Image (cartoon, rainbow, N blue to C red; front, top):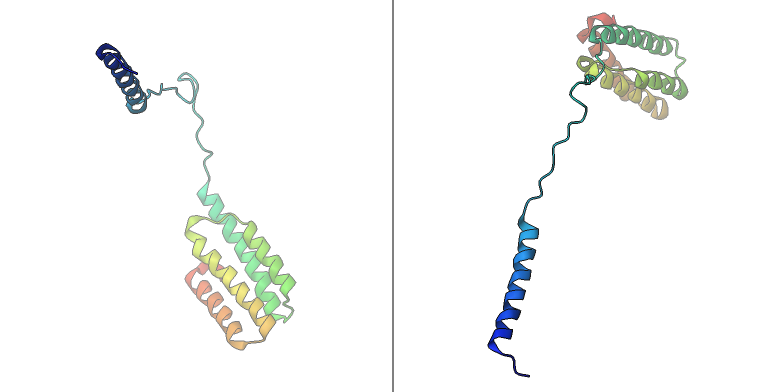
Length: 144
């Protein structure tokens, strides 16, 4: 089959046009129209403010109460896995102010160590939890 020069030229132009069209579709950035989240005349609500001072005072009171119960259980030799687990749940339910995160983690660690002691009977574990509690009471004067 023989094609004339004009036919070859026309087919070449069609292919070139097709590829140029594809190139433009792929490379042109689509403009995304700006739409504000809320109308300008409507007030944008802020996140609720947290009264950090109240949070701190509530936390201190709750931690003192939990620690008092924990120490009473130790002194009365009436500690059990279930009682420690209950106290840990109370700890986990508290909202922790940023400056007391380490204290919170250390209290949970001390209670975990006591649970280990109840399982294994290893005195070193018991002494480790006592050290943690004593360090915390020394570091945070309000725990005394």
